[in-house]
Image 1: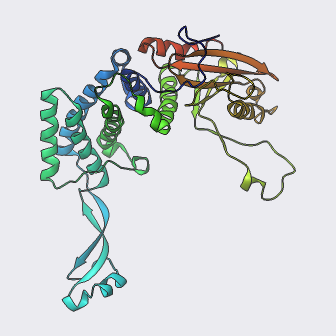
Image 2 (image 1 turned 135 degrees about the vertical axis):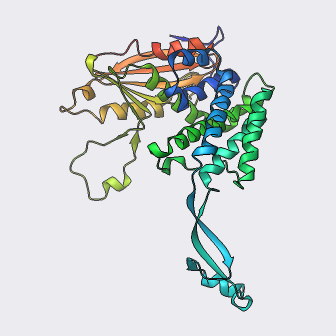
Image 3 (image 1 turned 135 degrees about the horizontal axis):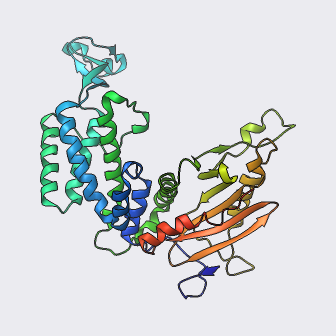
Length: 370
């Protein structure tokens, strides 16, 4: 089944002209917060994704006020500074080049205990971003008070923080909550670059961002909306080549196989490999005006056939799906090749939020059992 909003088949379908509210929806699905929010609130947000920034601001202000009073953590930071005495390691080359010894000084590198850490700066910067995004005067005032507290403590700002490397435990659980909220706030800031527009046509210039967002949104949606008692979900799983009689260095040159998403329902003996793409599903070729990408097809075929082994029954009849975000295009085609069902599907991001949600769930209705 292939339709394009009553228009002739398009050969250059892009992901431009996506309504901003649906970009908010993808950001919601991709966020850590979506995993923790209750079902009632989740439905409200899905119906009104524009409210996500307001809710994130309320939670941020609530958590930040408590955190600044009780949980503001210090940490050791590597510091380089000119001192009157030796501390830590001496930077000999710099000390000699600047002739610091003649002035009775020396440049040292040492660990300094401080609250002006990258984590605290990241949380601080989120408040500044909220002030620019929010329309609620009360929330703006709360954010400004939080900024004043950070400034009084001489904590700077940073928009980059490698939170994946941070170790969180029960002692600093508040930090984890605030980092997750700050991460969401920074993600939500991107659509504000296009305020005043009904659509985000400029996103075509940043396909990498949208491709990652679409992939994370699909993974996040299924993690929350599929019953964990029935479904097992793997995201970003690497697949191994089933080879033999290989030369010593073959592994050095083999390309990596990494799937976006694998869904397994062992109760019904089902496995589906989903690979998300952020290009046009239909391309013009030398021989026909509309064609699926041969590269994408070969890639999905390799994911399925390369994993077949007798010790893993689901691998023998696993299904595969190529999933594309589109504008005004609906494609849902499938076929079976050597025992594996291959589907070519789209999610039209110009549709109503509830239709998008139902479409994502409906993709699994034709899921074949082994």
